[in-house]
Length: 127
Image (cartoon, rainbow, N blue to C red):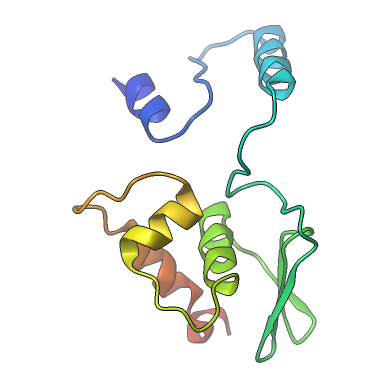
C-alpha cells in the first residue's frame, strides 16, 4: 500500500529495503534518461528569475532564499510554494491554484498541508 500511495502522490519510482546499491544506481540512471517533461517544483528554474521582497531575495536558479544576505534553508515544498507566490505578485491565489502551481497536482479538500507550508514561510517564523 505504501508503494501505491508513494506513486500516487508523485514519486517517480519506489525502492524497497533492503535494496542492492547497483539496482538503486540503475533506477536513478533510468529516471535521468527519461525525456524532459514539465518543470517539477523541486528542480531549478530556467528563467534566471530573482525575486526581491523586503529584506528577502529568492533566487530560482540557485534555489536559495536569503534575508539580508543570510541564507535561509527551505524544504522543497516551501521553496515551490514561495516560488509560486513570488511569480504571481499582487494576485490572490486560492489554495487550489497554489496546489496546482507548486505541486503540479490537484487539490484534495481534506489536505491542509498547504496551510502548514504557508505558516512555515511567514517571516516571523524565519527570524
